[in-house]
Length: 248
Ligand SMILES: Cc1cc2nc3c(=O)[nH]c(=O)nc-3n(C[C@H](O)[C@H](O)[C@H](O)COP(=O)(O)O)c2cc1C
Image 1: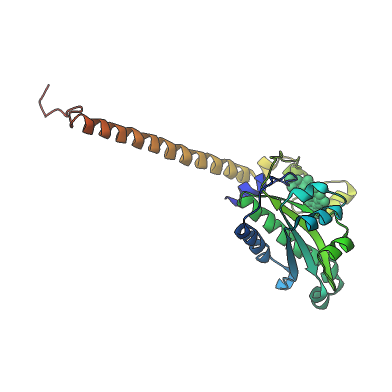
Image 2: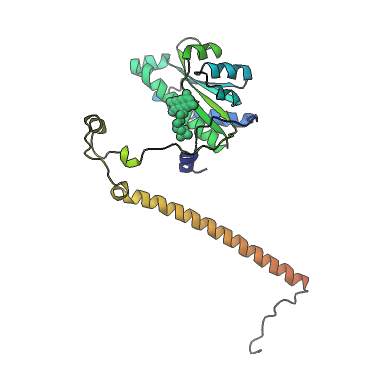
């Protein structure tokens, strides 16, 4: 699956089919998390895969009673273990990097799930203490969120996203521009400012479509040719005879 297509089409899924998820798919999703970038490559996350219905019910209850979660046949609790972060990076490591690491892993797992035809939703409205009790974690560890996984039973539309010109600033301190409510460097017309970008995007779309069309037409033509050959064979090779030179 094209990665840009995945960015566009992945949705948070909150309705799931009553179907188990194949274990190898769960493994591939967990592996995508394992391969995520992490601060100082510390990789101190733990992924607790939960399939037990009773535990899933408890996790849903501990996630601000988001009972829809129970339907998802797999929950992956993403746990950040922060003692190494504290040692290597101090308070910033403990308070920020460990969260960012887990978010990166979560995103990779969501995209992997999508690529495998599965739906997912990242849930971080959780009671950390209660979730910690349910999955039995102790020490310098913190449950960051729960990823629900399963075959989707809904196809939500893309929720509104800001246009790119509302969030991108060029060559200015974007934070200052935002706070002061004044917007030097704001891109009023993204197409014009970075015209090649959208032009290229459109170009790629057209080329892809053209390649698909050519493929389809070629297949149709081949089918037609095969049909003609079969007809010719049936009629004992007396199809349309090629004229000899000079023959009328
Ligand atoms: C940090 C974070 C926390 C979230 N927590 C919840 C949650 O507790 N419950 C929920 O239903 N969705 C949760 N979501 C999913 C968002 O609601 C969802 O990503 C957003 O509405 C955009 O929809 P989309 O993912 O389909 O593009 C969370 C997403 C993020 C990134």
